[in-house]
Image 1 (tube, rainbow, N blue to C red):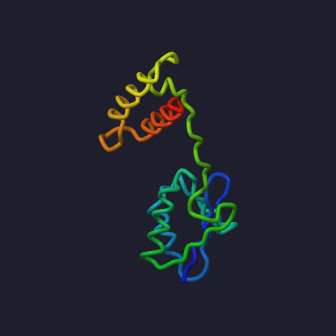
Image 2 (image 1 turned 120 degrees about the horizontal axis):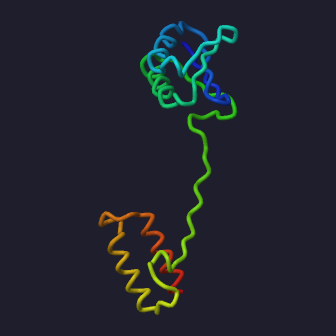
Image 3 (image 1 turned 90 degrees about the horizontal axis):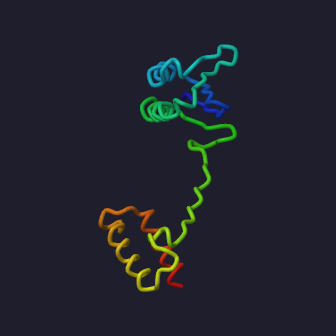
Length: 144
């Protein structure tokens, strides 16, 4: 059985083959990843795959696992298929701006603006979920 070892490096990935007849793996690598995005280093016996070809590499690895029966191992600082990115911080929007009001608006106008914007932006009626969350948050802060 052939093992494909993928190591994350600074600007891409290194692919190393171990055991078995890996000529089929190499030929499929060449067909999945275009030449400008891959290269071979004979001294280290490693293939370099540019990070711009990450999607092609994942399709190739999936093909190698399912059709050829090779085993894929991830190694290095990122020992999983996808890199972790921290969640985005939610935007803090001024509640009056979110409800399209002046700061001097009375409570009745705040409530009316909330209801009108909720009807327009409700996700069940084809509205934007993020906008609706901002509207709800703004109304909660002003109604309290």
